[in-house]
Length: 401
Image (cartoon, rainbow, N blue to C red; front, side):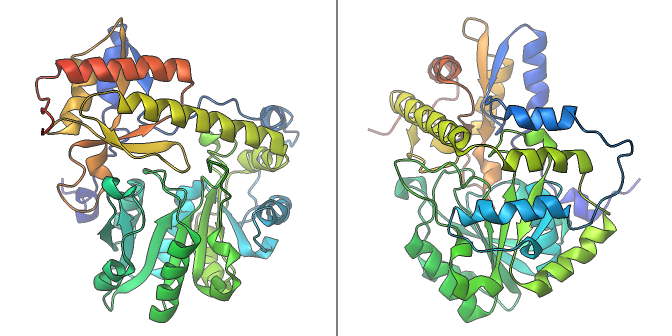
């Protein structure tokens, strides 16, 4: 039977497609440290679990398509702490940040339209673009430059009559870069001049290191009509499986368009919104401790990677990911080797090949994304596995002298 041309254009997720190898390793009794996926080992705030446990309704009923009002009314005070002035009517609750991206693409773009994105980028955005039948146009950022925003001229060079938006992720998944005020203003000036939109995934805004403060793209009111922000509860409160996110935009035409799609999928899940409402009430002390823990993990893993011959990485400014260049020809083959052929004291590590985080074919082939979502004891074991595996790997490249 014939499948759709659309689905044939999808790639299997580089984050998850090696799971069968990991499962086989576990069946052999090997302990796998999962640094391939952004699943924190941080405990979810207790009141979130209690809210689910105390769910007292006798019917799990349909809710509002835009999300429950109580939850939307609780969010503006949270955003206010980042200097952002939004109202409940500027917020749509979605089934995870993923759905917010899908709604945005479907609302802003027609089939065949284009969205410019710095690469490496969050790989699932590629699947969302395929679903919307749009094309991602890449502008390449480089590890050697700390994955800073490429010169604005490179963005202008990618603009065509089909360009509808530029999409950023800050703090960035997979690189950990945080776009500066200067970088944001350059992009905002460009989208205003071109009369297009800026979409920014700000899911990791809580995780900013080295004493810096996060700047939201929503804090520039003069550009508010062309800015769409994607948000999620998943990482902030370590509740990834709850699948609750938000689309935040002050442009009512955009929200009205997204609402048509939201109504077609009926409503976001009810119990998860109860959990999310409890999460919003989490004390700042919890978030501060989590941020400090991730900063400590970042310092540890960067230091460990720098000790491994032939490995290069930049120091992330935020989020809990980094991209590392390995002394191998093909990082995916090496990641399979880690799971299928290697173990150290009954342990190994799972990484995400980074080639799938690039639009441009061939880039990232010797790179991996590492999610430092485990405690430093586990990270120490995982880095020992990585170092030993690189030393024994038949496809290792010797560093150029």
